[in-house]
Length: 155
Image 1 (cartoon, rainbow, N blue to C red):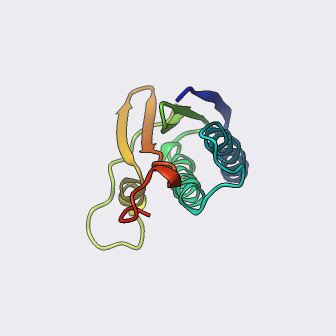
Image 2 (cartoon, rainbow, N blue to C red; image 1 turned 135 degrees about the vertical axis):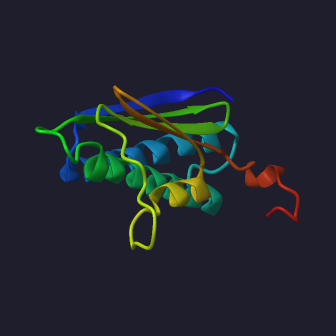
């Protein structure tokens, strides 16, 4: 299946931008998934599997964005930047969150924090690359087969 126009966002890394990016991603996912479903000959109303997938992707992406805000610039003298790119190509959604901050190793020992990467990994296939110019988190998730293509055991 063909691709949908990508979503590209960039802004100063700050708490208000996390919410704005999250809302923009949810709108984009709704449009992209609806276009994919309609192209497959199904209803324009998203089925539950696609709604759940969109919710999972927004949650994982929100966690990645919050990590940028909370950690990437903790010792910086000024604000940094963050970007979000989302693509839907060949029935795989790819979301990349990047920053120009510094990587902080996760804390060890008992804590009520530090579960963000585990959450992202439970919802998507995640790859984290960090270096001197920032961190890039790539999350991928294949779309479920359309409902009319699934066997009764999969439905």
